[in-house]
Length: 179
Image (cartoon, rainbow, N blue to C red):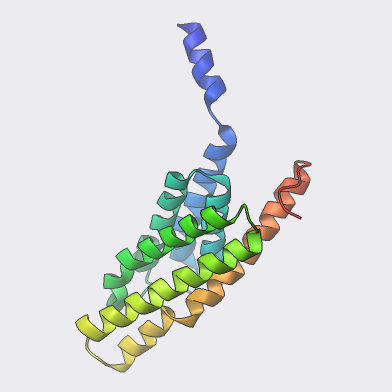
């Protein structure tokens, strides 16, 4: 029995647990306190890129689900855009999956492609929802802007932040993840 417990403990990847808990905490807590898309967005997108880099796909996608719920509950995402929450979750999953597929080819190219695909998905989804489900007023149009070009900007900024963190961690541990 003791050998079985030791074998289980030896198989636990504490680094993965650390990354998962840390990224999940950032994704869920940050939107509660910072209500500026151009501050929160890059940090949340950095957590998505870091999750895609350090975690398995399922865990990374789980990290990607949390920010939109936290943003809606904290008021960063206006209640008017509540119908967008599932699409934001899907967009985050798209970013993670796209980046996972392309990161081994080139980090920058993978990050740019993932950011573009996420942006296009959100932009098209927002336009579809806003044009079919919501009244056309100034508040809706202002909220719709949140789902357009700022998504691309904050995603690319998040990729830069994530790259810097990955470089720092790899240098600290004496590895060369990316040049």
